[in-house]
Length: 217
Image 1 (cartoon, rainbow, N blue to C red):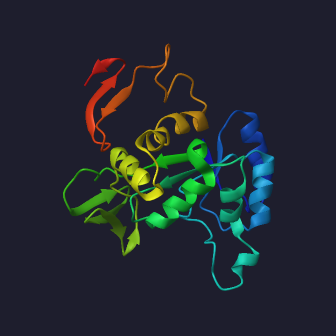
Image 2: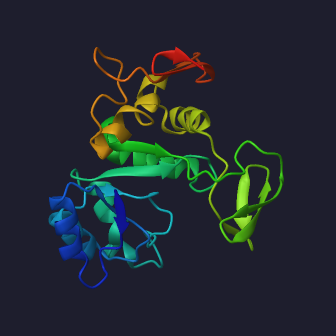
Image 3: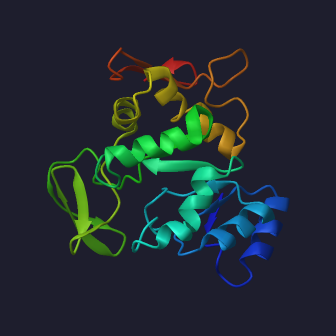
């Protein structure tokens, strides 16, 4: 899997070759306009990376509805699935719901963007070569977001609440859908022959038990 900005010189050719080799090409970290994004999709891109984050926004000014940019392509093109960080910080809950409505239960994918400080108390931590501050669930560097401390169970709970989905739909966005995007066989489903890696949740989406390879951890 690779992320590429489709407006870069030579991007359509790179996308086409990567797709030919079986790579899932994802659009992201991009200032592309609508046309450049659609060219990338036509070349073989089929996913979007942390949708809305590190992308040209839908609106810079009151005229931008005439050029919806990369987000217009990602949200409306049925060939594209989209992942999102549903922590209520990277995206407003209304935007999470918008993505869920646009992509539906089959093409919405949850990610966490979590760093090594996840699960740790508030404080200062290292992310690669620099330091980040974790306060009240927000991870920042010099005032800007720098990853997250979101856990996947909380992402599932948030998606169910923000998008008004039932829990199984939200769970699919964290299991079945990402497996489909990555084209991983026998992953993300409960069926005969599939890998027996799964968690047991209660009705609130809280983890009760975890199994890896059929063995409880």
